[in-house]
Length: 342
Ligand code: UDP
Ligand code: MG
Image (cartoon, rainbow, N blue to C red):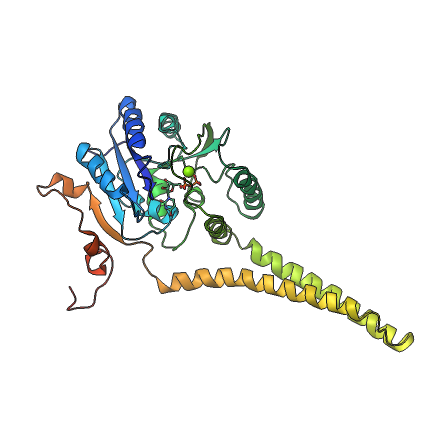
C-alpha cells in the first residue's frame, strides 16, 4: 500500500539520541492514524547508529526503511538519497536530534491536505547558540536579497513536501544543493507555519563553522549569480574611479609636478585593488568549482545497503553487508565496476 506520509530522517553519529527519537517519532505517527513509513538514512556514522537503526527496522519492518550510505555525504545529500526511497504522497523531513518535535508532523500534514505542496517552517523560539542565530539571520537576509527563494527560516529542516515536488527534486542531477531551497523552486503553493524548537537533547551539533560556511556557499552559488554580478559591477566601478584618479595625477604631473608624498596613497590604492581582485577570483572560483564538480558527474553518494521496501515483501530478510564489503565499490549500485572485478 502506498503510504500517505514518508518521514525522512538523516542520521550521523546519533546513537545517544536514537532511542528517544524512536519512542517519540513512532508514537507521534501512530496517533495520526494514517499509513506512514519512516525512511532513515545513515550518513556514514562511525558509532552504533547503523546497528540501532537495524534493530528499529526489525522492530517495525512494516513502516521502516533504512538507507545506509557508504560514507559521510553531508545532511542534504543524505536527504536526497532518502528521497529516492520514499513512496508517500507527502514527504516530511526531520532532524534526528529531536530539535524538531515529531509531534508537529500532524500540523504539516494538515497543510499538505489542504493543498499546499511545500510547507516551510519558522522556529518560534530557536534554541541554538547565539552566534548561530546571528549568522542565520544574516544569511537569511542575504539570501532574500539575492535569490528568488522566499523562505523565512531557511535553516529549519522540519519541512513538508508533496510528491510532485519530491519527484522534481529527484530529477535534479546537481551534485551539491540545499534541499529546502531546491524544493521551493518547484513548489506551486508554498506555505509557512510556525513550529517549536528544542535544544539538542544529547550529543553535539554536527556542523562546524567551516561546514556551515560550505553549506551557505552551496545555497548562495547554487541559487544565485548575484555574487558574480556584484563583483563585476563593483569591479567596473572601481576601475572607473581608478582611471579618473590616474588622469588627475597625470594632469597634476604636468601642471604642479611630480608628487612624492602621494606614494603611499598609491600603495594603498594598489593593495585595495589587489584585495578586490583576489576576492573576485574567489567568487569565480566558487562557480568554476561547482562546474568542475558537475562535469565530473560523480555520484552524490554511494548506498551501501537498504533495509525495507521491495526486499521486505519478498522472502529474504535483507541484511547489511559486513563493514568491509560496504566500503567496496563493487557492492554499490549505480557505480560502474570494470569487467572482471566483480
Ligand atoms: N547530519 C547528517 N550528516 C551530516 C551532518 C548532520 O546526516 O554530515 C544530520 C544529523 O544527524 C541531524 C541533522 O543532520 O539529524 C542535523 O544536524 P545537526 O543537529 O548536527 O545540525 P544543527 O541542528 O546543529 O544545525
Ligand atoms: Mg540539530
